[in-house]
Length: 87
Image 1 (cartoon, rainbow, N blue to C red):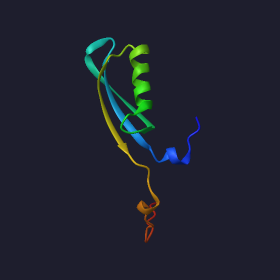
Image 2 (cartoon, helix red, strand yellow; image 1 turned 60 degrees about the vertical axis):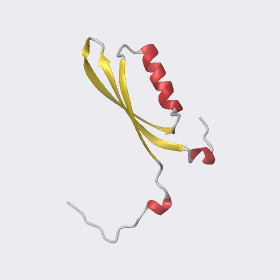
Image 3 (cartoon, rainbow, N blue to C red; image 1 turned 30 degrees about the vertical axis):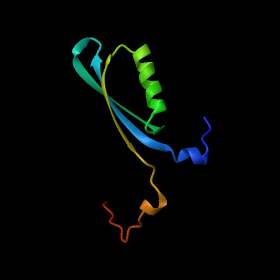
Image 4 (tube, helix red, strand yellow; image 1 turned 135 degrees about the vertical axis):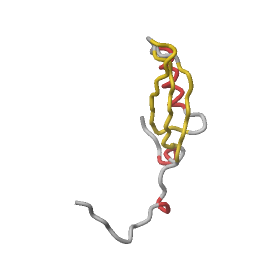
C-alpha cells in the first residue's frame, strides 16, 4: 500500500482492546489487543478487521475500547542533558 507524506499526517497509532466471548464458554470474556496505524475518527483498518472477525471467527464481540495517539513531532523530542548507565 502506498501512502503519501500528506496522508501520513492523518495516520495515528491506534490501539483497540477487544473483549469477546470465549467460543467454548460464552460466559467467559477474553481480551485481544490490536495495534495498527489508522485514521481517526473513522478507523477504516480497525473497521475492516472487526468485520473480518465477525464473519470468520467464532468468538462473538462484546466490546471494543479504542485509544489513539498522534505521531511524535520534532518539537516533542528533547535531548537528555546526561546519561546514566546500569551494568
